[in-house]
Length: 217
Image (cartoon, rainbow, N blue to C red):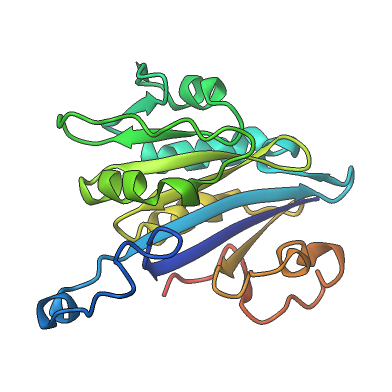
């Protein structure tokens, strides 16, 4: 049995740790009235309950899940890696990304700067300015996140594309593959993240199982 989890969070404010403004400076009325840009993020992970392997790429349905992800983001795009090289093929690109690093899903023909190399000891939170600059330009950024076994995918976007992912993954549901949609604002602990290990029969509030007949709201 594969438990696939799509964790989403919308209307996020992405700011560098500590903020960007000097705490001693009073905010102006113009700053107060300026709209704050918001973003969406999506985290894709899975658990193979039979083998107790944790990671999107570590389950027996890894290829199906990866194909559904690619279906949403690949059309009409190219992928820019941190070394400055590009690929038109998602599978080739993600295989070349080191765990912990990212690639830019390039849309349009505007010049794009690669996302910096993060490394095993870093975090995307150390590069918020670079991330938001890419998102504001209409691109998306996919992080290849190390899991217990294999890797997960973590995507940031300026627009909310949850609906596209919902309809891409829903047809994969079967007796041995269950799909759970999770509100990321609730998933703040490791215990919640791995709910399937202790409360699969009754998921906590904020986790909804998607069935073949579940409508999109």
